[in-house]
Amino acid sequence: MSDFQAWMAAQQARVETALTEALPEARHAPQRLHDAMRYAVLGGGKRVRPLLAFAAGELAQADPLRVTRAAIAVEMIHAYSLVHDDMPAMDNDVLRRGKPTVHVEFDEATALLAGDALQSLAFEALAQPGLADDAAVQLNMLNILAAASGSRGMAGGQAIDLESVGKPLELPELEFMHILKTGALIRASVNLGALCGKPMSEADMKNLDHYAKCVGLAFQVVDDVLDAEASTATLGKTAGKDAASNKPTYVSLLGLAEARQLAGELRADAHAALAGFGEEAARLRQLADYIVLREF
Image 1 (cartoon, rainbow, N blue to C red):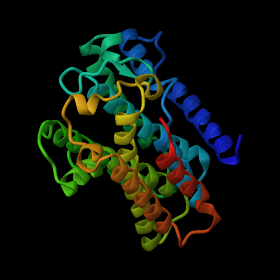
Image 2 (image 1 turned 90 degrees about the vertical axis):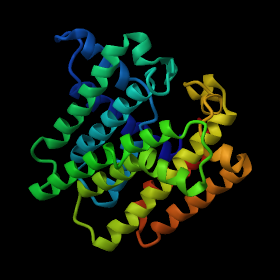
Image 3 (image 1 turned 90 degrees about the horizontal axis):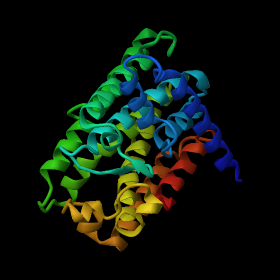
């Protein structure tokens, strides 16, 4: 196992433990809702957003305990979005992370409530005292996560995605959709991780945010490529769903070869954004490589 793989496994384990402790126990009423929340969050996923938060935290010399709180908040928002996106009113998918989606395993009403409750719990985790030395910084962190989750972020991107089914989109329109739908929460992860640590200059934060923007788009481009190429068993979710649903993707717009090339260019741009940082940014560089070169 490489040093990076060992680091990644350690952070994933840290997040899994923290999520297990933060989520309500299924034995507490209402049991079915709490069971659904734990089912949606635990025991699956690559935890890319928490990994990005930890990598940015290392750059800012942050206390890992603080970053863990930010990381689980972002992951709960991500999990809630998947629960809602999979529901019949939206993407109507039956498989997620290799197991039945929450509305299939439980029911639609429970899935809807589980997503709502996960969103609330995310902000509860981020609002606990002591996340930052300065209360204004912590308030800014709450604002960052709220903006990334709302109509000008993830929820807005999903709305555009639903409106775009069967419609031809130009590349700038597709990019705008994914800057919101996928990129906003990834950018929030990086920014929150950095804000858990020592104050950074405005220029450094701008470069870090540009890195996150490039990585967020690259993540979506690679997702589109994998959706077209990989099997359902490999992905842990229904392969080819975008094409079957006639959704605009980077592959449908550019073709596989150009989509792969775009992912490579975004990876190079992400590395360039980190040029002014030293070894402390090594994990961020490695994560850019991991996101673009992954096979599932």
